[in-house]
Image 1 (cartoon, rainbow, N blue to C red):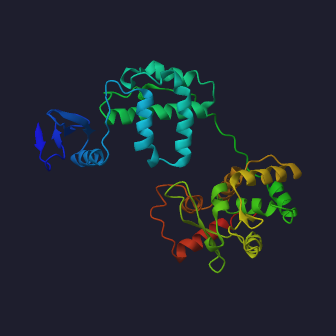
Image 2: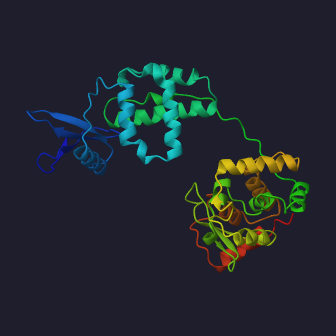
Length: 336
């Protein structure tokens, strides 16, 4: 065992012998003698970080007795804030389905009991997946704290998501949209179809994100490849974009001088689909955009850049004049 010396009363990091996934044991001395095992780490740097975090706010737990409720509460405090809000909300909702095990010592909970919370939740694949995800988070946290020695969550299963059925807008439907472009909100559907944004991305675009002189829009969310991407304005929708900008709202797509929440936009969307006798969801605009460009023989690298997809061909996104010209040429392949 190799002992790594640290300042007095700070704690210690020791490397255990043999082949181990996490060979570094992190300890903190107790008053009156002995020590507390803070946890185990894969590298010395991880151990230092764990020890620093412990010294800043020690985890005072009894590893043999801490219950599911106790571990979950500690996880909410220490780990959940690092997750996105939507993920946090999903995991909080999932925890409600684990109520039968709340007072059980966490180290005594077996894989079949975890599986029961999934199988007996009476909900769809999404909820089942969230419960499975929660157990994975808790197991990793418990492993980090040396409460357990193996992750039973690795054995869990949940109902798979059903295959998605996406239908593109037909040329006839796109023509119908153009014939009704002057009606409320139909212009937004056309902007969707000819730009490939996600619904949240389009509704987040501000007037400052639109450069009419350069003929581009800049935005995007969700992934590193999708953020801050540049999408040329298709020549057919430029008048629609200009008209929206003339309204001088806080977003490109605004309503009565205010941003439009996704939930509100979906209400407008349903009204459009009903009036025009169509049956589509907003994401099918994005699917239509990609499908039409691909069918027209568009450059795959350019399509991935426009969509914000990661591919081996996109590499580093550097938008020089040549790249922008290529993107503009690709987007104009959509001729419907």
